Length: 77
Image (cartoon, rainbow, N blue to C red; front, side, top):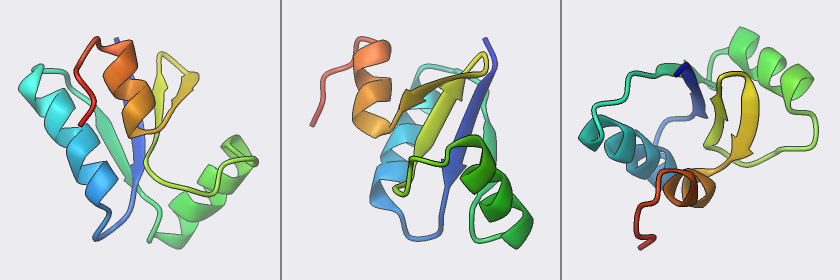
């Protein structure tokens, strides 16, 4: 499973999503949108999304932190 997560500094939901992935032992690639090149890629790949985190699994956009929790069967909150 290939997981990619677009994040940003100081983002609590990003930290929560990464913690969930870490707890599950799932490897992921973090893409920090504070980098202008990553921000541009984020806008091109996910033009309708403005909030972070945004998570892709095997190239499929699944959404944000709560969507990840649902996808992995975790309790939200």
